[in-house]
Length: 222
Image (cartoon, rainbow, N blue to C red):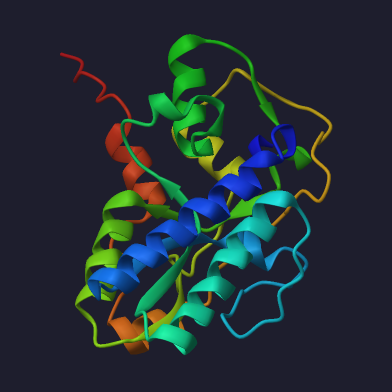
């Protein structure tokens, strides 16, 4: 929704990305950057890196344009880069992201505040949730790899519904509402075979384990 509300963000994102590519070219640096699983909108999961891309919104167009520009810079100037298509990234300390924070964090905030949490698609929406610590590890592996140019999924290869998250988190104050977003994606799921093969990467943290660790420990009754 951020890009729909301010379409100039497409221009700003691409302009800033070119600035980074130019810097990498000038300093002979390798660049590892965040792309997005949103690029796969219109495809059937699990999502593979070799799927055809059909940009369906402003955000997707911006991210796909970045990937294509990185490819051109690699072809023309030999700029090394790896784009990591991140799936649903969650973790602690997301407050600064506000309404754009991951659903996992938003569900915990709703539980803490008591405010009613609106759930789209009757909670059947499925996401491939990946912890930020795993994402950071993927970035390091990509930077240290000998790859000159590539696009790689960073997900877990597992999908959980919003209802699953709500149930394990113990959220009671929620309601199902009509989905207000056009082109709403009902399911994301990464094919992680390429990440395993070229980076030796596999996620270590399961979102259900993360949620259980965040839940308060009930005192033992005497």
